Image (cartoon, rainbow, N blue to C red):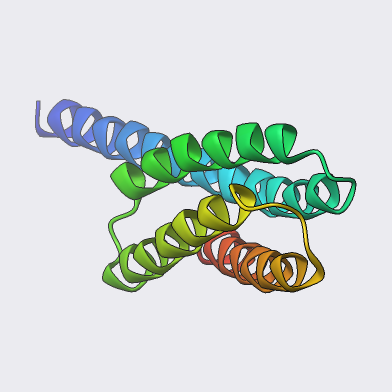
Length: 124
């Protein structure tokens, strides 16, 4: 009888751990996708496609909300807050007409987003 209960307990722990690691893998995959989105945003802006870049920013925002709800680390949570500020600043730049100074600002923001999301993907 005790073996049966022990077996059931082990099974429950195993399924719980696999679902936890599965969700972390999905979050890491989402963060990796955000690295690519950040690159695309900069490419679209350089080609003067602000509307497309803005659509990519919105996709990035939705993904960040998912990451924020799934991350339990205080360090990653703080990083996500910073990345959210970068997204807000990037939206502000995208609303302005194309210029070399705006391009530089967006390039810096894009680099911050890429590096932050790489860190999150590796941490998960």
